[in-house]
Image (cartoon, rainbow, N blue to C red; front, side, top):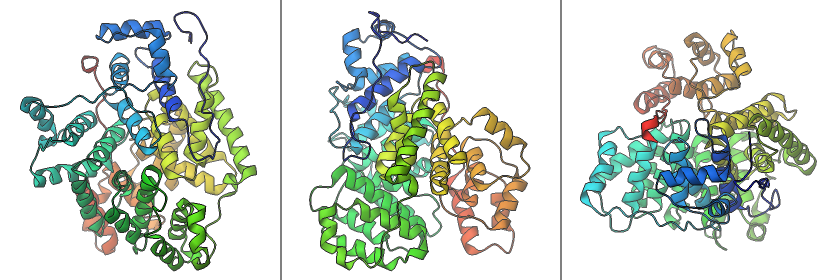
Length: 519
């Protein structure tokens, strides 16, 4: 594959020059790199030279130049109009690049500002067009995002509050079960509403969702809620750190992590730090998951603020895994560099050092907001997603640190969408028995898991609940075992309640691929 600009100058590989574990990242170069990768790896219509892309964009009515696109592709300029044109020209899912870029830029408040103003929806006819699929319950991800952006515009009342609540609740329910780029667009839609005058509706919808004693997935919704700051929501999340269900403790920790990254000014933690410490002290080290997530929250607090209450902390936080200590981190960096070299070659490109950086952050970054942002960039393009899955699955299966293998297992599932490495897919399809993490990968890829395998896993009683639990795999896969759990006597109220929640929520959701006439 050629990788030259129209004038023949070789493209210099892009990299993020910031320290690996430093306080900031170079967001501009990351989003520029994503657009370059979109152009060079497009499965249907790749444009190997910038001049080819200029011509293609001019066909669509966007006049530009190789120098202008070079500035966009190196992160010097952020322009939403160009991103939208790339999606169309390269036959990508509508809004998939725009959503991932917007989410990443919102996560880090020092990100470059978009110089393209948001199109203002001002006519009743246009607003009616956007409402139609949402109100009919048939909206796909891009339509949800367009609708949310229009609703968020100042002065666009749009809908009665109760109707907006119903639609926001439906959006949240889709978000927790959707795969692929439809996840990006729905997450961006919910977060956009949260940051608008409709933010209270999103907060109320999330509160109602978490009030269900049998809710099974909350992390993505809580992350979206954390994208806007107010005292009451911060206090609510801190209170949830003491909830008896570990699922809600984890969701609250993730929501606080996003809020702290995007909005924490000096003193952000001061009004709630005594309560955070009290919840932490109440979680004994032997409690496992709860202790680890509360330790994660403590690590979010700046050192000078934490020093004020350090004498009140009754036990040491959960230790950082060996792979995240300096020696282990260096080994993981080298492994990610090796995977990036293989992945770059598979894409027909020279080594992409930024690919290695993003792979490391997906599996080795302790700040959940940063690892999530890196996964969004790697998951936005089919080619990048495939090489990322190859790398993260390899780490999950072969890395010597069991803690890191577990983390990579879950993070691979968030990237898989519709792809598994072919050899792994064949091996798992032929296997008579599957481990839980193997079932996680198959369900994430939309591959049927035999109902008897799921039944045996349920009866074994291992890892029933949680984001990657067997019961959630049954729900996501839409297996008839779900109905059996509701009908057969002997299952606990907790199991039956979870099965009922999945019955109401629905199975794994994937948006249809765009057809040529859509692009």
